[in-house]
Image (cartoon, rainbow, N blue to C red):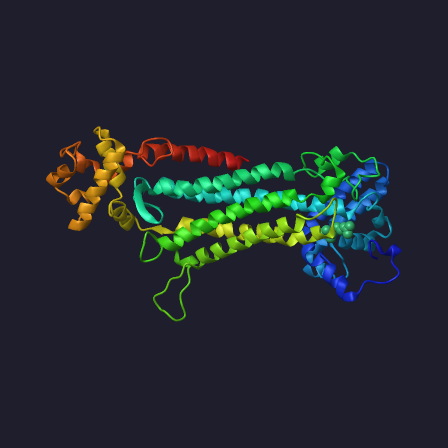
Length: 465
Ligand code: ARG
């Protein structure tokens, strides 16, 4: 029996009926629907709507429906069920007769779907935070074991300055930690219970909404029935947080694609996550990275779809909201399947340390430090910059690096250049160049050591929830 057929004379057009159903995609909400329905049954029993025998019958039948869905996936192949709410009601009635219809007393699918989706988003957030913590822990482990290894860092994709490999990995750690924090913050607004909002104006039953919320581990009930049934902010916030997370994955993937080219040759992607070419025998293609970049685009698309679908909706429930489920699921699924692969790739990628170390000392990456050397000898930085610029130009003409210039050549540019232990040539070496950046957030080894220790603590806090 349909949930609403009473006032209709004509049956639905068959094609329209099929087309408007949400069961093909909302059936994945069955566990949430069953949990919320069992809690609701207890709440209306407490309010005197059901007898003790009826509530027991309903709760048992709900559990049986869930068990059967797990035992036989065929059970969910139901062409008649309009949505997950209808499916549960149909099967309740099949199991226990008309008592099954009593569960819908004072209830609307509008509050049910809002509740189911909040439960879904809450679970997804918890899983994703755990996955991000795992990813963070892999990044941190690799950073900790990188020791004093250095690499070139880029601005404008041009070699800029050397940094510690650990410092570079910690940059990604920061991005992903922000994502975990954003999701944890979003969870606060997700974790409120719409049940008891009715279709739009609130429940007609004296429900204990606080107890109902508590039974489903929500922090409390939602405050306004019109908002609660119309609101999908929690889904939008979630998917927007995911779009930033996906964007971080995409930026990382792009950098790894570049770093694994023969031109950069700073990392060697793990074979387990690369493929060959059917035409060119020499190829090892970074497929995981490329697909990660593409899948991130889809998540951004999901966030856009949700925003555009909701932006024109007057209060309260509109059927458009049914169509926000798929982008929500797609965004969650995309990241839930992607993040573990990213973590494994990072765990297994080989850093080409020799090449990194060489590149960190090649190509004038010490020019900024060289200018700092001159300014520490009293030359105003702007002028020091100019002098080192001229020294770079001279070295380029000669086909050498800064340390290939003679003291006489340098002093012809500025008399402040000196040789010796604390002189210019000593200052050009990798160690002092890194050491120059000895302030919090910088790449000097002592700073990075502290940053690693702090990162451990912060990761512990995320893992502890
Ligand atoms: N399947 C619907 C959805 O996902 C359930 C709510 C239906 N409410 C209604 N008033 N027709 O939005």
